Length: 515
Ligand code: HXC
Image (cartoon, rainbow, N blue to C red; front, side, top):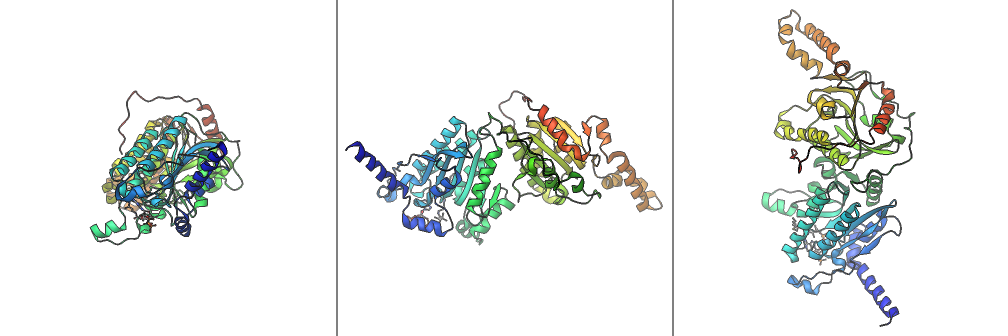
């Protein structure tokens, strides 16, 4: 064959492979409101940046007539490209080819692109749309999953790993996303579960739909497995692009520096956000927007454990991770879910050199039988562990209440915050004035001719003595009591002078966090 003929032959082979599972399967995919795997990659990446590899990989399975089946690309597309000029490795499972099921060669393609990402120290994005382990390939499929889980774990904390669930993700397949940093889901399209409705019906006799069992809302609101919820694939890709702009390529870098921008101060004025009545709630996200560049805040796990707010913003162009109690929900208490949510985010920021800004306003850990039995001791300890372990710059602002364990847990001086500021409205005490007065003045209250009046008097006495920032300031536990309108100024300065922070923990293989 001449070079020309060989080139034509190549083109023909490529053309065949690019058909995926064929017109009928693609039609079915589109009818389900889903893009094809290749369309997804093209939509997500910068125009013309995608370079595909291993297009001609074939499976070698023989059992169950597999030797008669040709599966283009073995049901997964892999390659490299850029997002906003940012290099990434990517794979997308092609549901039109044997339901995107994972056989040995399919898994090897994924493993190979993950290895590239680790060698090149750039993020890996995995788009999941698969019926799970390819049943005909038996243990080889399981081996493939194991190889992926191992790589996910090795890559954790080294390169950003992003999972996008755009179809079924069933059985053990869910554990690769669960081991990655961020999971994106799309309403009505994403489905994640270990055992599906069929198994649940036959084993337990319980009826449930796939959507109710493991749809996008379930994982965004209830389980916390998903970090970003979207209504469409297009919206999901926009969110991925936005996330990528905040995070560094790997743990060896800092996030890209953006031009500095002032907050939109007319819309978000700190003095107007906090109500005069200390018991009245407010939206802590307004405080974040009042201090972040351009009043921008990219919230992570917005629909899960709403009593804790976490997410990314920028201050003087530098990415920071915000962690804040949300007085709008459960008064911003720490409980099992909010502790998990915050702890994981803190560890992400610490692994990827993103300074932490913590905003405190909480009455403490949530009391209750449910919480105790759900393990609030172990889960609550996670937040203590992650803050104590974190060595990135840690800046804390106490806005109002900082009671008891909540005060300690929310990046206090004692967990080695670098700077702790408090507003004059801060109340730093071992517990709320009402509870405290009831305990320490119990006898006095009970024995007085007018117990209610005495109780009120004692509450006021306690408030005056402890419910302010000055006792903590007198001990040096906070560095400065600041006017709320000076918050950004103090934080910017603290960030600037913390830029060279280089703290190392003790020499150890790794700790044993309260998983
Ligand atoms: C081989 C599979 C497959 C699989 C789907 N297909 N899943 N082939 N192995 N796991 C094939 C189908 O045979 C079909 O092929 C094509 O993909 C499309 O599938 P449909 O069933 O027609 O699609 P749909 O109706 O949309 O249903 C999708 C589905 C269903 C809900 C995902 O296919 C399904 O339930 N699949 C099995 C899910 C499952 O139990 N997976 C767990 C496997 S065990 P044709 O040729 O007809 O087009 C596992 C353990 C891993 O994953 C543990 C790791 C630690």
